[in-house]
Length: 246
Image (cartoon, rainbow, N blue to C red):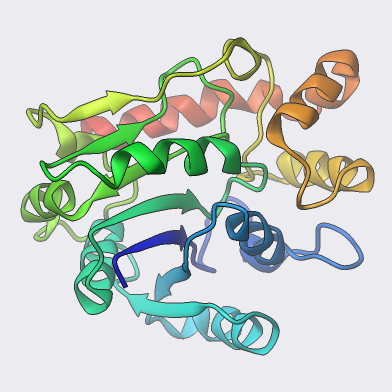
């Protein structure tokens, strides 16, 4: 295997317990939605979770319901988990899907991976600051991952990686259309209000609905965005705090 889509998820979430296995609708749990959307990127799918006992239930569920690869690695050091996953499956580059981002834009990953997979130097493509939260995370190649792994391998807890990316020049922001920027919309699952929001959204849409379609609908129905967008400020402050620790 050379290229893959990696879904990063574990069960030991602190703010919303075991969110990866929460029921979003009658037919889909969070992990089901992530896997179904990942199929639309068009690459082999790997669930990168931990070796902790707390993730045994997640692994059993995915094995019983989906035909994807499951990799188990470090519980708390996400970069180490990624690095060991890359080396086990001999990956050159991967699209990274965060287990929180139930409505990530699979079109963005598919379009931009065509470019990224041709780049041989250390390379990371990431979201700009003004993107709709949850629409896109990273595309990273192994040479870039090696660099941040060397910086982070002695750190016990690694969840936000930006602090380890300092002084690595080969980072690009993804280019976005207006639909995906500067919106008061939050498409990530971190708190109870986010869960309420997603349950309402997936009564209207299905796991294959495009991110743009959902955003356009939310712009016309601001009563839905008010359910959880107010959380974005504290969520971003928490992300920033974790970056500053390194």
